[in-house]
Amino acid sequence: MALRPLGEGTPLFCVHPAGGEATGFRHLAPCPEFRGPLYALQTSAGGADHEDRSVEALAARYLAAVRAVAPTGTYLLLGWFMGGLVAFEMARLLELQGERVEMVFLVESCLSAQLPEFDEDDEREEPGPVAAEKDMSAAELLRLDLRRRTNRAHLRAARAYRPWRYAGPVALVQAGKQDGDLRRAAIRSWPCVCAPARLTHHVLEGDHLTLFEPPYVTELARLINRTTQ
Image 1 (spheres, rainbow, N blue to C red):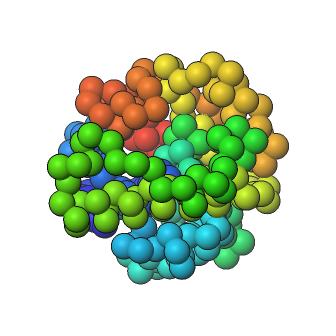
Image 2: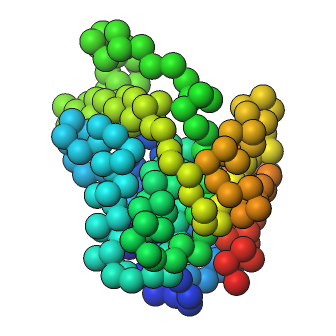
């Protein structure tokens, strides 16, 4: 999805969080602080059942989409939450292919040990409708059910992911209002698979969701622009 196909410098390819939707990046595109082209990667309709069973499968599929836009590097990647794992795996694959990755931004991303437990019984037990759902159309309810199933598939994939080491530059971006223990756990775990000398850490104002919303997204855009100049 081209959010801003024109711009200066290396295109930024953003990978969705769990759930598969890329709409959360829509506020980043119009930020004047970010000057480059911007693309978002999202799960296709019904993709959770046959395409999204692993982080590795998502990374390979999304990398093919990236290469359709930019056949050769340099590359600039960003992943939000579970999408950070996919972006990290994409960068690792590009490194193996001899391509240069300028930066991987891991926004609010955690490795498997910090992710919530997934109960397989949750998938078998359909939740009862909440008040807001009673007024939804059949098509809206179908989309909501698909999003829930995709979210569960992505969380399963994230918990199963065991990354190999990656030598390229990585920026870990965290929200200041994130749970402190979770933030510290991520800070401890990422150096185990990244080159410590090429891993930078940034804490921005906002929380897990508002990092990509005004006014906080402006600081994120500034960080991307400053880090990649």
